[in-house]
Image 1 (cartoon, rainbow, N blue to C red):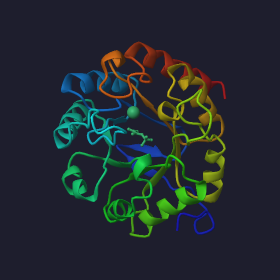
Image 2: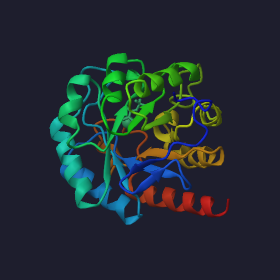
Image 3: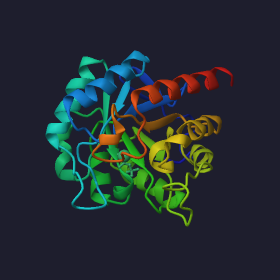
Image 4: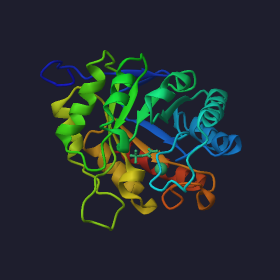
Length: 263
Ligand code: PEP
Ligand code: MN
């Protein structure tokens, strides 16, 4: 059902008045994890000041080590939702188990399914059974075919509001955290009718590569870009190495706008 052969026209998803998959690229900015009201509020203000409509932030964090910060859970979602509402933004946040879905629905506008859960089929089916857009990220070592099949699990339950997100894959290369598979974007656009995003933060893991990879994403036809922003990345409880601070965010955004105008 996600195949272009089944449906010729692009799927357009309306979130908070933002028409995702239509003309201009959509941006999803925000911290890796929700840490405090003060923290997300600062980022939310900066996003809203740019006229952007969405904010991300993890409340349930799927961390590699069980001893790392695991997120604030439902409390984090409430904090994020409050800061978002105060700034006219919609919330994108990851859900890691079907059990959390119900309680999260009151606070989340877009359900994110993370790389580590791309083949959590029960979670995919649960997300497919609700009436909320889903942002599905590519698995750490998933082929494009497996990625498309994961989206098929969601749509097969009735929910056709799906965005795909390339976020880098595991290769032998260590210069970047993951390897951004930029060609996945045009392939996914050809094979499916769904909007396609590129997460430049998790794919590169490098602040100095956020701008060039975001430009590349837009140049190959991505419908949107995701990037992490934190008021003080040095003290961030997760992904301290790769988040932009608010000044870097202003510059990144300004440069991208210039790039988009000139193309
Ligand atoms: C995230 O976006 O917060 C995240 C954990 O990314 P990924 O699932 O792509 O690793
Ligand atoms: Mn992160």
